[in-house]
Length: 242
Image 1 (cartoon, rainbow, N blue to C red):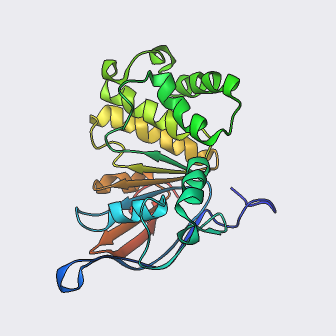
Image 2 (spheres, rainbow, N blue to C red; image 1 turned 90 degrees about the horizontal axis):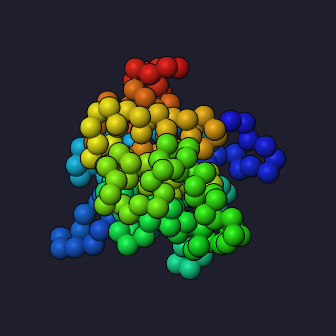
């Protein structure tokens, strides 16, 4: 996707990023020397073993946590310089987050769950929010589940609902944490197709997973080892289509 005059040149730029957790004997360095740029219209896989720094990177990208050093520039904004109030509203409009365990509110219907980000950021008029939620659920193939509670849905259906919720405010960036980790291979494959289609529509999609086979489906991949980028590859290198 080509950037226009109104569109920042890159989606995300990480510069000399470092995250250290304080503790005895100097603490723990979770990320170190991270330099990377995410483009629009691509799906990037971030892989690595447990403890490699994947979750830390995701938390920094989404503004849930803050770096110890370096900078995170998203759409020309240094998010590590924002206060918590501005960061929360920015996140609601800019980043769609898909959690590993779905994190759907059990006391709300599926449609109401999808409407939550709209209610928080007030991007859409109130009278339009349910229609938008139903349209997103229809795109995910679960419009018929709109008025059910999460407990009535299968794992794959809940993940589709979580993806619909992440799209509620039409954010340019989607971050997903182990999006297929709790699904069977067939359902997981369909979920990955949804993410691929989102990237084709111009969104930046970042998938964090311990499953290295997800690399072959991404446009690019980052493999983390001990908090550092070991490899950064394109789809042609890791087995996907160039």
